[in-house]
Image (tube, rainbow, N blue to C red; front, side, top):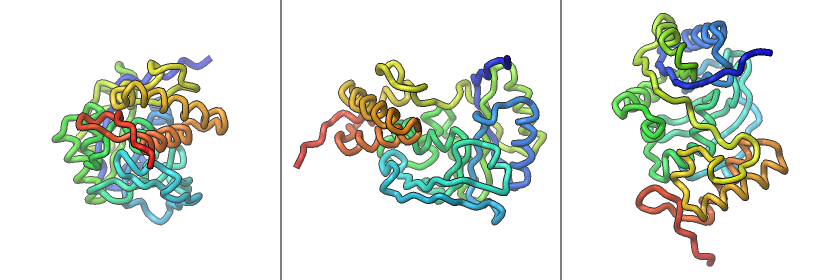
Amino acid sequence: MAAEYTAERTISAVFKQEEQVGDVVQRLLDRGVSRDHISVMGKNFKSTTRIAGFISKKDVILGGLRTGGIFGSLFGSVLALLTGIGALWIPFVGWVVAAGPLGAVLLGAAGGALAGASGAGLVSALVALGMPEDKATVYQTRLEAGEFLVMAEVPANKSGEIQLLMQSAGGEEVHTNEAALPRPCSGRCNSANDLSPEVRSHLSEDAQRTFIDRYNTVLDQSNDPLKAEHAAWETIHQQYEEDENGVWSKQKIAV
């Protein structure tokens, strides 16, 4: 039986050309990096990439990063090898195509908590994930200019090797974060302890219970964790207001 993949650090880099992205993703896969732990984001993918399966903005969270989202499948590119593919609107960047767990972080449960309601764009989310603000600002600027962001979550003992791989593949502004990207509940949430710390810290105790109840209800109906995250955050935004500390704690008064 194959050993379980342990993601402990996140290596990030920007690439100028889409061809470089395809090359580095294939090299990461060849080195044993799990496809579920590779993220790619960019706004200038060529016409070989096709987006299908559109849904409307009302079906996704409109709080957090203020990212109206369009989900779909991408074909004809290396992104088809990855998971969680869709399109996101990010303030100061515009529409981007995102593949891998970073897209889920930005649009799903972690995204709703990490960025708060400030709509401060990608920088605020990356800083909340542990990235220095100056590096996050560079990434946002270069994405807006049409370049590409690649992230690989790797075991700690592989971080040096993968950093060199990114550099040799043409990666610039390479950064190592001492943690993997946050994940939502694995299956049903039995208590607040099952929520990621980033999510839990942005919800009051009452809001945590509301989030968990809605998450579990939709998960039981759909068996789709991402859909359950969206529904849970939508309920939070409908029933609560965010306080000055970025915590969803003030219950809205029914009209």
